Image 1: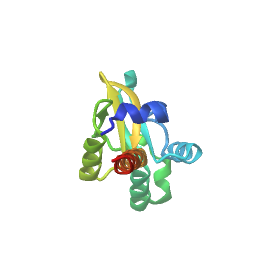
Image 2 (image 1 turned 180 degrees about the horizontal axis):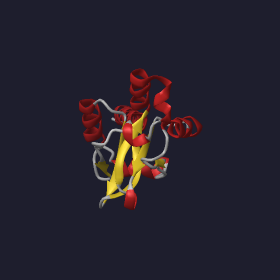
Image 3 (image 1 turned 180 degrees about the vertical axis):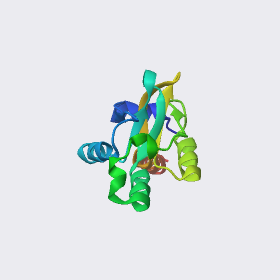
Image 4 (image 1 turned 60 degrees about the vertical axis):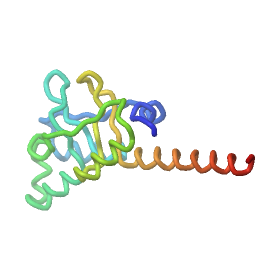
Length: 144
């Protein structure tokens, strides 16, 4: 089974980050402009302070109305961030994402942010893996 490193090698390691002091409106524009579903919130020293997802924003707007967009990212972000390592398997990620009911995992290497994995990345990787296995089985059957 593939590991996180393989996904990052193919998709890239760029991670959209935002300050906890940025407005929620700024975060919304960033997500829309970049066509992404979450942004990592970095605090002082560039450590991970939290993660802000579309779901977090929807909850804030549902609770506070449009005025929520004037608040700081730190007031809406999820501060208990579950992360993964480049050596984690896709199976591990699927389990973590399913149990936690979240769709984005920042990737850390020795405490440093080196990428982010989305549920879409995981599904794409797993489908490619299954197609490869199917092709190998076909070749085996045809050549037996």
